[in-house]
Every structure is written in C-alpha cells, then in structure tokens.
Image (cartoon, rainbow over all chains, first blue to last red; front, side, top):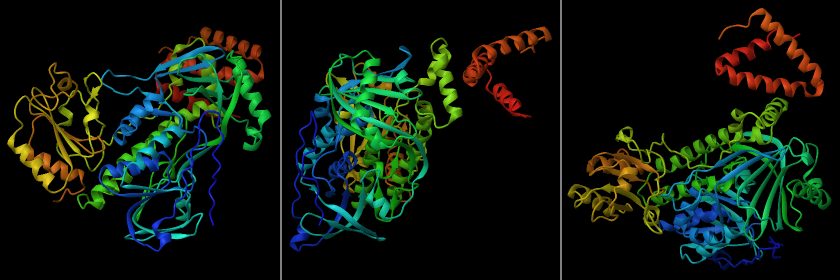
Length: 557
Length: 61
C-alpha cells in the first residue's frame, strides 16, 4: 500500500495545499483505455496535459505526490517559456508575482568584471527572464488543469510497473487504497530526472556527468538590490568555486555554491556547515541583515540525454528525457519546449490528421535541441565549475586577467536557454523563399512577437492551430480562402490572420510588414507550436497546402 | 610577423626568467597561462597559437 506524504511541507513563505488521493474508476470496477496518460505532475507534465487539452485531447495525469514541489527549484523562466505558458493560460498570473529581469553580473575580488544585458525588444510582451518559485508555477498550472474538463489529476498514485507494447502501454499503480491497472494508447513520462519509467525500461542516457556538486539554499532576507544575476568567482571564503545569487518573490534569495570535492551532501546540508557558508557569503557582499533558511538541496551537474524520446507507445519529456546543466536556466525552460513540441503532434496523430512520422519528429527535433544545449551548456560548466586542472588553470588565468584586460571578459558570457531553431526539420516546407527574406523569423524558428497596440501583441491572438500570416491590403485571394476551407473541412485546425489595411491586424505604420520583410502577398505558415514551416514572398495556394501536409508528416498525400 | 632579433630574444629570455624567479613555484602555472592568453590575443591568429601549443608539447623531457 502506497502512502504519500500528507504533511504539508515546511516553508517560511509558501502555504502548501494538499490535493488528496481520490478513488479512481478502476478501483470501483470500471476499466477503459485512455488515449493519453501523463506520469508526473511537475511543470512539464502539467504543461503537456494543458497543451494536449488545448487540442481537445483528454489526458489523465498521475502523480505520486499530493502537493507541489518541495522548495523553489526552477526559479528563472525565459521569455520563450512565458510565451508557451501564455498559451496554457497562466502567464498573466505569473507576471502578477514574478520579478522580471535581464542583467547578469560577474564579480571577482569585489569588482564587477562583466555585465551582460539579455536583449529586450519593444515588440516582446515578456521580459527575457522572470523569477518565480516553482511552487507557484505548479499551483497555477494545477488550478488551470482543475478547471479543464479534459484533464483528470490523480494524486498520491505511485507507478510500480510499466509495460510497453506496439499499440498501447500499461501502468501498474499503487495507491493509498489498493493497486490498480491502467491502460492507455500513449504514455508520457514526465516523471523527472529520476524517472521511474525510464529506469523500468532500462533506458540509458548518453553524455557526461560532471564531478561537481552544488548546494542550493533559499533564505528569507531583506536585501535592497535589484533583480539581477550575481555570480561571484573565487571568493575568499570558498576559493576556486563560484557562488550565484538570485532574487525571488516573497523576500527570498537563492544562494548556489559548489561543494569542496570530498564533502558528502549530508555534510554540506548539515545546519552548521550551511549556516557558516551562507553567512560567509553575506559577510563578503556586505549584507548584515538577519536571515532564515527556507529550503536547501544538493544537485550534481549533468549533461545527458536519451538518444530517442519515443519508445513504442511511451514518450519521454523534460528531465525524464534529458538532464541539463543548471548554469543557464535550461531545465524547465527546455522541458516546456518539449511539451509544446510534443502536444500538437500527438494530438494531430490521435485525430488521424498527422502520421507516426510526425510524432517521430518530436524526438528528432527535441533530441537535436538537447544535444545543442548540452554542447553550449558544457562551455558554461567548464567556466563555472572547471572539471580538471587544465580548465581550472585557464579559468583562474581569465579571472586574474579580467581585472585589467578587457579582451577576456566576454569569456564570462553567461549563456541562457534560448528557443531552438528547427532549421533542419523534415516538417519544414520543401520549397520556400526563406533565403530571400532580409528580416523576420526564418524556417524552423519561433515567430517574432509584434506589439500591435497597448497591451496587445501578436501572440495574444494565436491559438491551438496552424496559422497563416498573410500580408495584404485587399480581400484575401479566393484561392487562399478555398484552400483554408478545404483544410478546415478535413479537421485540420488552421487560422488565417491577415495583416494590412482593414485586415485582422491593421498595420498602419508598416511596422509588422517591415519586421517580417513582407510585401502584399507575402505568407508565413506557422506550426501550432509557433515555429515557422515556411515563408513565401508571394502566395501560391497549392504550395501552401503542400506545406501544411508536409508539416503533418503527410508529404506523400 | 617578424621573428625576434637575437638581442630581443635574449632580453625576453632574461625577463621571463626574472618573472618566474620572482613569483615562485606555486603561482608559476597560473602566471604562464595568463602570459599565453595575453600573447595569444596579441598574435590574433588562432592557427598560429595552436601551432605554438603543438610545438611546445614536443620533446618534453
């Protein structure tokens, strides 16, 4: 009999709510096969469920917990994540509480040796980075899911067995009442870095595990500093290591530091060790305010991914699929892009509109993304936590030079998560005019947001559908309208958005057209996850139709 | 880039020896690494610097 922890977790700022286990229909003698079951009610599992529901796909979400994340965990959400979370309906709520920011500082021997501002574009609704504790994000996602009749949340249910077949998957669950069996057409493993499902299938991740271990500690303290990233290199109290500080809502600061090589996590988290180190860091930065510990944890830096995210009817997403180094906010921010990429493809497949080839591109696109992230993140890791003597010497040489030599300072560049560019995707239009465009989002890239008016942006108007952006000052061409009607009649969600005079979006100043390098007749075809399939200087309705089929993995039809 | 004249090379030889004597063994590697980065930046040519790294790896006792 599985008994989840019903005691609300301790926190100095967050009131944990219990989501009780409820008897599922299976324990009342009913059996059915569900189209999609998601294991894991963390940010990625919940966003996957909400995304699927946007396309009308019902989802059951299984969690072995009865409350949200212990501690703040993921605290930095990128602009791209905010754009994805806007689609699932929680961005506005997050912004009421989150701290937006864009500047990062590298500090060595009391000098700020490097400062970088993440670019902000006046056409963007969201700031480059937004700090909010994971508990709030999970809570908002849960409350959003609870209101959605297509989503069923099953708390306090532990996966104790999983079987994969060619045409379905089966779960064995243990609960506070009894064990039961659940059968589904597709099983999504969003059960985190220690994924039970990944381990049950015996799947191995590929990549590197770094030797460094890090403490994360959240403290409640009043520090009158703006929200910026602070990285302290080689401080006197922790020679050779790096300390990060991040501001969070509710008067919480995150401190993050590397452990001495031979120390165990238990030793590092012992109160006397933790207190002394936190105090040493605060003393060094000249903060004398009193503070209180909220939560602490130890993690290891890893850069690993499964080589394939789809195994028969089991699909891996988020940390269950890959473990990415933390320097650069790549955990949840990568996972949201997985969820968004997966949801429309699986939904189209379930509706009979997309093919299995379409679903395979979830794996190919997102594994490629993970590999690129790993290559990039490894550079940050080598600088933040040098893995050997050679890298340590070079890093120390750069630190030492940075006080007087400007040319080394860009080596402090702090690479953050960015949206992946699916430029080599088989879903991209085979023929388009991509190379003829001087500006605007290219093939495979996410759309560029456009500020249409006060508090009104292009992304506010996007839904769970393909979108055709068509620039014109006239009535849209008959050929275009009839193709869109034809695709709609097949059940393909597709929405025409016209830009120009007396169109969906009036573009009086020509700003939109300029940013998209568009003239009358220019078309962008956009996937449901907001990535560009193709763009053409002049519309050809038949080519557009072929591109939609291409994007559904139906290139032959 | 012109090679150093013998007198210049001898002067650099002396200066580097003096600096190594001055800093002591513990800081030697860090000092030399800094020096290489500074010189690499002045050479301004990745291939030349990498050739020099290869050359320096040869015939170590």
